[in-house]
Amino acid sequence: MSGALAARLGAALERPLAPAVAEFARQIGEEAGARAVLFYGSNLRTGSLEGVLDFYVLLPGEVEGGIWPRVSYREKPHERLTLRAKIATMNLATFAVAAGGEKLDTTIWARFVQPAGLAWANDPEVAIEVTAALCAAAQTAARLAVVLGPAKGVEEDYWRALFRATYRAELRVEAAGREESIIAANRAHFEGLLPLALTADRVPFVQAGHTLEPTPEAEWRRGVARWWARRRRLGKLLNLARLVKASTTFDGGMRYIAWKVERHTGETIEVTPLREKYPLIAGPAILRQLLRARRRERKAGR
Image (cartoon, rainbow, N blue to C red):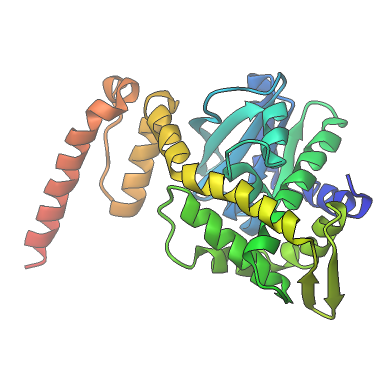
């Protein structure tokens, strides 16, 4: 790890979190036998306990094959609130390799070049391994940002090009311009990060004030472009495979769907044991319920 990059990202990992978030993470981590739990997403930035808390649970073990992470949903009463968490689970070893760009996956390094907090760890030493993985994610993202970005520009130009490309490569429902909101919401995090990541990765660049001009050799650029072309071609297929797997393995998925539907439509979806066990079979009935509710609203509005 580069000392400067590791110091910056390691300090960011230790940011203070709401006690309720830390306690929820501890409970999830201990029950899973995890090494660490990362907290990320908009709730990390805002400190809000509303909506869904996003956790990555990192387990011991070797690098995994197949499709990962495993996804689950969980609720927990807290004072007058219900805490809701979407939990992605994978081995720390797999996380580290994916962060370094060694897998076809794009989601780990693209997500974790963004802010994250270490919500819980079973051993203080694990923070070093997690920091190393986040450094690898930053370096992977920075390499691609250089190739996709302008010949010369400010940092935001490169991050913008990176996130625009990775969102297009993934099977996402994000609105156009999502990259702008990521940068705007996390300006302090990204400011100065690109030069640190390029230095750690030994990618040469010239900096004059706020303007950067990366100067790697043409063959290096071609190599990164080839690396990205393969991931871009397979990105949507890989995401689709994850969605298919999640449709049958998303623990608590029916409760998550019910909450999302009620949050966005006001329509209460009954979560029965049968629907909990077979969420795909429940889909048509839920759709009919929503269509009936929409027709009622239209009639009432006349």
